[in-house]
Image (tube, rainbow, N blue to C red; front, side):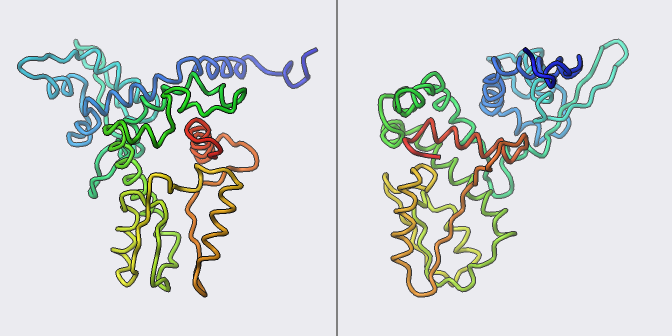
Length: 292
């Protein structure tokens, strides 16, 4: 017997639920289109040119040996506009039908190089390697197997050591993401003044550290990283407790451990913040045994 809640769903709500369900089988289309746009450099072209038509974009992309299909370009950027990555202004032009001009949304600007040259592009271009493990996610449930290892036959770090292109994308992605995150953090956390020596454990190529030392030049910085020294969210709770306890024991008097991490809410919410944290959690489920 259907519940009273289910029986009271009106036609509009049912239609909305149906459309939402229809997005799920094709959910991989958005990252595929975004990745193609970055490879084609479309977002940078739009960023440099301002509001622009698909025909103008196609002309910029065409070469003496290769002609760009205007209709295909328009279909791709139209799709991005429907997903709030681009803005679109449409008007009827007598004798020519509808003219659409496209511009970047605030979100899309993180996918183009800013004044500091950083963006989320490297992380986005890693999508193909991550998508290879989607068919193995059920293995994490029934077999306790790491989906990435199932898909590639090796652990994440081993794979990075064998695929230089992926390794470079990963390092650039982490450096750029850290730079953007720290820029936001500096506006909310201002407790570096009293620190004389700072050790960045799992600091990668040192992008975060360079920003901190540049802002607080009195700090002596040590950027520490090895293939098996990584951030907390790739480890289980038990490992994290052990790691943090060891860090605490190694601290000098008045020392402190600074942890910058995402926190999964107790209950799921349909918000952008909750989406980001939940997605990262599932990424860790796919990449690392115990990661969360």
